[in-house]
Image (cartoon, rainbow, N blue to C red; front, side):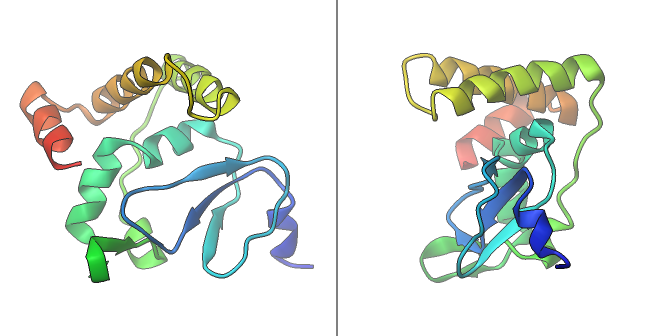
Length: 140
């Protein structure tokens, strides 16, 4: 069976080509078609990092682009994304917000506040200053 069993587990999925990070969480064991990649993990913390404005900003500086300004989400670039360390309290706070966002499927009046809270945690994990945060938010 090899790597096929990884599709049947919880995983982060993402497209080969996208305008910004579009990482999603699959718990139903779906198989992807065409150019879909997976990260076999159930760590929601990683999902929050990968979808953050910080990673979007960083990725825009390292990835090649294709027509229309789309990025290639291939191993050459993905392997360069720095993943910060987080203590259990930070991971739990992120996972709580991510679970809320997943439960409402990113829709609703509270989504913007939850996303802001998640981004604030990520900014802290990367140790960004207010000026750096402003730069990241202006360019993403």
